[in-house]
Structures are given as structure tokens and as C-alpha cells.
Length: 319
Image 1 (cartoon, rainbow, N blue to C red):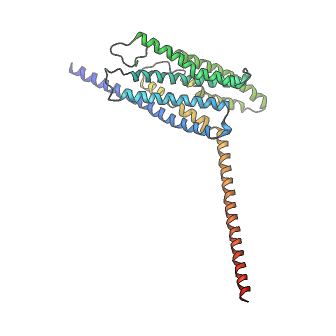
Image 2 (image 1 turned 180 degrees about the vertical axis):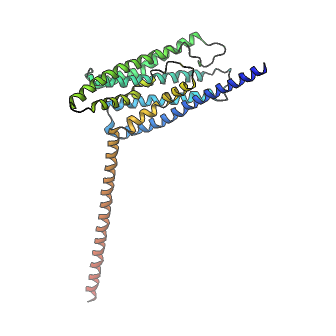
Image 3 (image 1 turned 90 degrees about the vertical axis):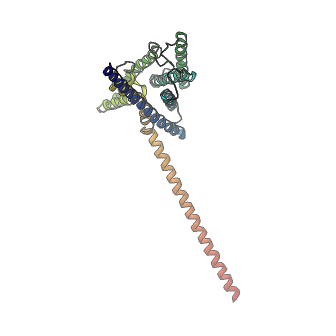
């Protein structure tokens, strides 16, 4: 009996260490993503050349990543704090649970909006891009609120068991959240296939004698995969493995950082605008320096001339 108890305590401690490891990976990934996404939003807002509908969609996606990352970091930190006892069920934990799930749905909804905007812009279905932008905003911010509202109502009606608290046990209610996420990923796969078909046909018509269109198409696919969130297609599948949980934590929490790097810090258009701005600043600084040096030299010439005139006047008066 004593050996069984020691083995049970050891396995429980090992399980808690694994849970903490996965949680720390989530927290670190979300923190890094939030910092990089805020910097990317500052870059987008600093240059007027980047103020367009496409960058507006990117900015809303970045904001959803920031809100999702921040809400999950706060939720995990509060739930892991020692001040929260096991028998406590404060209202804020239910609120943070719902907020974290809402921001997660917004993240997937804005990834779907990226696919919708890119696909229908290429297809030229909407007569005005303003209507397309409004549609994307409804998909990104309003639709997740309806879904999470239904989720919270169902969970409130059903209630919790004695050993549960703060809706931490999500089965089977998680399917209210998972089904819209899976549908958004499936739609993005369809959009990506059609986008690649249009892109391949355009590259083939431009570069008929050049085989680089396949490389460009493959590069476009690799860049669009994290933007559309297609790496998360297997995330709803639950596998009881530490390696899978670590992989899922890395893919989920660091996605915002990867998107910020690809579509802001390594984006050719953004880098060109930043280089142009730096060149303009350097040229303006050089011109200002030349003007200041010219004024100082002119002032010196004028001062020397005045001193010469005073000297000549003094010589004339002495004669």
C-alpha cells in the first residue's frame, strides 16, 4: 500500500510538472507574440503608404492575436496563482474563460477574413472594397460574440459538477467552439486552393518560358499557411502525448510572432517604405547640415567683412 501511494504521488508530481511545462510554453509564446504584434501595429500606423484595406485586415488580425494572447496569459496566470483555492469559484474566472474563448474565436474569424478578403479581391465579386471590409469586420468581431454567447448560455444552464470549477472541464461543450473553428479552416483551405489556381495561371501567362512560377507558388503557399491558420487543422484532435502537447503549444502560441515577422518585419513592401523613409531622413539631415554649415560660413564671411570695414574706417580717421 505504501509503495502504491509513493508511486501515485510520483506520477502525480510528474503530471503536474508536464502541465506546468506546457503552460509556460503557452505563456512565453503569447508574450513574445504580443510584443512583436504591437511593434508591427506601430509600424503599420507610422507610415501613411501602408494605410490601405489589405493592411487594415492585417491590423485587425494582429489585434485579435494580441487580445487572445493577453487574455490567455492573464487566465493562465490567475488560475495557477496560489491565492486561488481549489474550492473557490469567483466570477472573474468565468468571465476570463469566456473572454479567452471569444478572443480565440476572433483570431480564427480574422484568419477566415484574410482568406475571404484575398479570395474575393482576386475574384472581384464585390463592387466596392468597403463592403468587403465591412463583411470581414462582421465575420471577425460580431460572429464570434454570437457563438460564445450561445456557449456561455448552454454552460450556465447545464451547470457544473462538484469537482469542477470555472468551466475548466470543457467536454463536450468545446464542440460549440471547435465546429466553427474547423469550418473556418476548411473554408480557408478551399480559398487557398482557388487562390493558388488563380496565381498559377497568372504566373504561367507572364512567365511562359520560365519555370520559376512553381517556386513562387510554393513560396506563396508557405507564407499564406500561417496567415490563414492552416497549421491548426489538426489542433482539434486531442492526443494524450507530451510531445504533441508541446508541439500544439508552440504552434498555437507562437503563430502571432510568426505572422508579425512574415507580414511586417520581413515584408518587402514594408521594408522598402522603411528604407525609403530612412534615406529621406538621411538626405534631409544632410541638407540641413549643409545649410547650417553654409549659414555659418556666410556669417563668418560677413563678420570678417565688417571687421575689415571697421579697420579701414579706423585707418581713415587716423589719417
